[in-house]
Image (cartoon, rainbow, N blue to C red; front, side, top):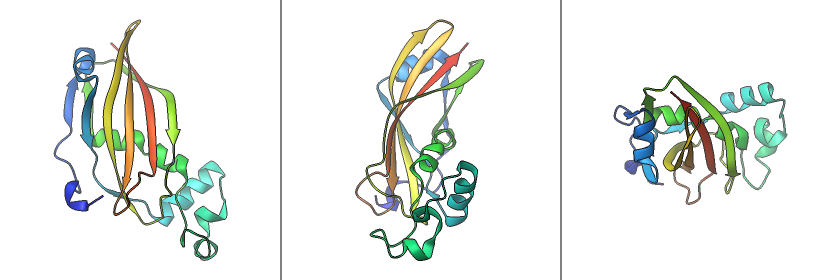
Length: 162
């Protein structure tokens, strides 16, 4: 992705007005987050917290001899940035509670080399009313600066309650 097409910091995130606003936005793109650089310190900290200390993530010398030529970011670390990057794009007001309900589908089609810059594009693909609220599915694609394939594609399910 060409860095000129995504600002380093988006304009103020727009506000979706509660359940009616989510229903209106179903089937629509929501926008793109700012660029975030994922550095080795972040990856090593995630390795410690998750107990996933595989050398491809935390040993730059050994990883330098791998087909990637460097350490790569954990897929689950990339995925963990979802809510943070969604906050760059929009906020939902007029709801009493937001619940991360899970994921429908996740793929990691390309590696994310440590030190890369990523941004996330989000669309609201579905909105279904449920008892006391709404369930939405956000389609997320993580772009890697200068790479043709996304490093993560996921369908994230949230529930909002009034």
